[in-house]
Length: 108
Image: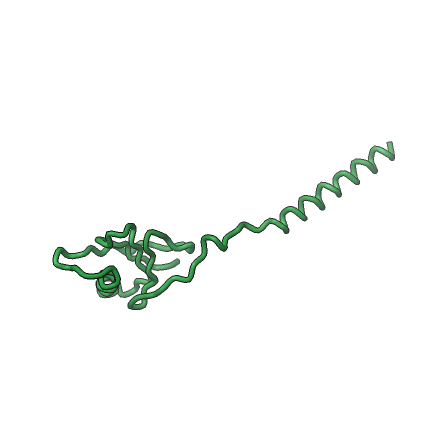
């Protein structure tokens, strides 16, 4: 009986130690999803991507029909419009490369 108890205790300790080792050594490869995000007019600009941190949506901004120019100019104009419409904004998310509209966000 003493031998069985010792065997159970040893097995329990081995399982516990292996579990701790596995948990401590597991590190998800987050480096592939992290990035340094550029800012424009004080807003973090995300194009076809979303922030890793939680955020709340403040609203949207849309391109006017008369608004034309390079992609950089379009981003700058919509960032400026977002900052005017939502002064508390911290970021802007362009869902696609058309840059026709964007979601204005504030981080939680």
